[in-house]
Image (cartoon, rainbow, N blue to C red; front, side):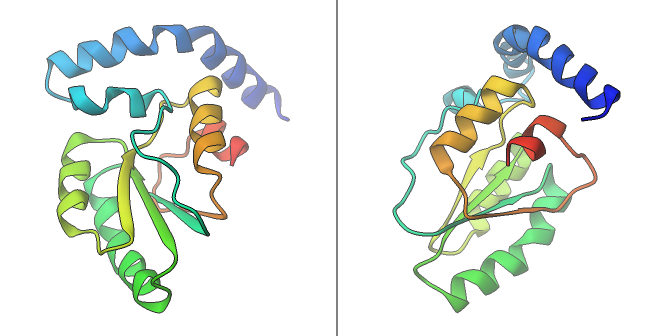
Length: 144
């Protein structure tokens, strides 16, 4: 592990306890969904469905929309496949929630803290992960 990555992991480990307060502040400004705030801390709001699960992540609206054709193609090719789509913005969550095909569902991506990402990954245990974005979150990627 590079020195920069080790420093990032150490910093996010130290700062992660501040995440709930920061998320509540964002919620007061309308940037977080109050009902789904635990998802941002890696706590799923839905059970993991049985079977294979493909996790697709796009940070915001543009990346989420770019994933839709792939999500639709995967759902059509294998209806038994579970498709978890994550994003980090309230707008993208609302948009994806309206447009995802049957067999696909949305959750918010966790903050990039070691505990939140570990909790998220331990719950979902994806068989495959696809990231469509330019924002790369080291703890999430390393955990996956």
